[in-house]
Image (cartoon, rainbow, N blue to C red):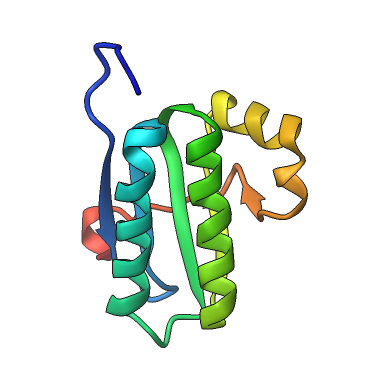
Amino acid sequence: MSHSTEPPFATALHGTTAGPIVQATGELDLDAAATLDTALRRALAVDPSAARLVIDLAGVTFCDSCGLGALLRARTETERAGVKLSLAHPTNAVVRLLEITGADHVLTVDPDERAVPHPHER
C-alpha cells in the first residue's frame, strides 16, 4: 500500500490501428494491480481481433511484486488470446525490477517504442 503523495494509479485506453495501448501512470503496487488487470481485460475485449497490445509504462513511478504479478498475468492473458504483449517506455524503477527478477526475459520490453499516439492519430 502506498503512503506517498503520488497521484493514484490510473490507466487510459487508446485505440490505434496497430492495436490497443494501455497507458499506466502512478505507483503500480498491491492497490493498483487490480486496476491494471481490469484495464487489460477491457483492452482485449474492445479489440478482440488485435494482434498486439502495448502497456505504456512511462508514467509508472514505482512497481512492486504485486505490480510485477499484474504484468505477468497480462502476458498470460494476452498469450491465451493470441495477442502479442509489449511493454513500452518502462521507467528505471520498472526496468530494475524486471532485471532483478528475470522477468525481462519473459516480457517483451521496448524502451524506445512510441506507444501513445498523438491526438491526431487516434
